[in-house]
Image (tube, rainbow, N blue to C red; front, side, top):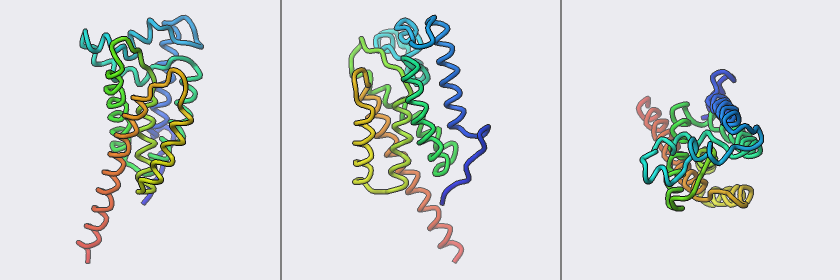
Length: 197
């Protein structure tokens, strides 16, 4: 059963887009460049594996989800967030949606640590891939459909500088959480129906 879509002011997707844009404006001011974020700012506010692994800057695993390398990076991610996020609002509760978003993003960033200490990673891609995976598995409940859509999205997002670990990690968590919430919802509906008989 699909859920009623909240108004724009109540939409977690719109709030996430707004937060990402605000952070980009802030990092642009710090960088002195609206088109690109400086490496110094990305290392400080994004995820610099060296700082995480050697100085315990674990908070970067979270903040990096809101930092973007350049304006095109931000625009691309926010378009996909709007597409999949607004759909997710119809399928999941707000708490479920936010759990999918942030757990997927964090897991993708944790996997990014495997790339070595000198890697700097930024962007909401892992979280967005998680939302995408959750929507697809919830709607289709078919591993074939999920594989097909996942391959397409990976092809669309492939290219130089793309953090495949973050994308893959976010997608896996999104698939798992989407499947879990779908199973729980079906169980709840069946239980209520049997209880009323």
